[in-house]
Amino acid sequence: MKKKVLIVDDNINNLTLENDLLELAGFEVFLSENASDGIAIAAKEIPNVIIMDIRLPDMRGTEAAKILRRDKATREIPIVFVTASVMAEGREAINAIVNSGFIGKPINTRTFATEISEFIK
Image (cartoon, rainbow, N blue to C red; front, side, top):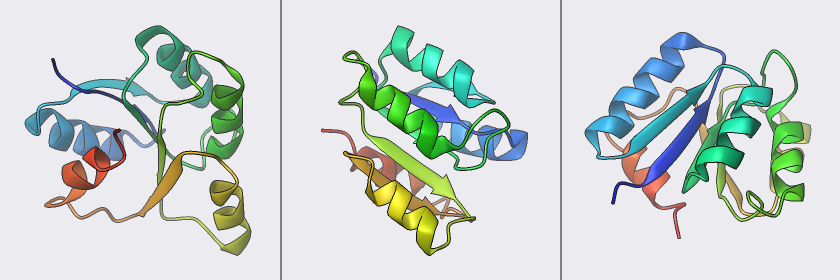
């Protein structure tokens, strides 16, 4: 059975690139351009991992992660924040999210799928 991944990013170029890389690696991919829809998709599909941008149009990715952590169905899903915009305080917010990690942009297209796989238990 394919591993499921949800990508939440409002930049269509990032969504397309990450989608293509992960589909080529054999993942079943779900996409969302905002946090609210991403939370709904996560609750419905229960992906093996969520890739989350920090800056989203409706709320910060860290806020969406806190909502996911409060839901019994989604609280154990690893969340990987993929972003170029993380200062010291942003890193603290990410580190405060249990079962999460960080990959900086620009991503390495050769290793991205492997890096994501490492977050799946």
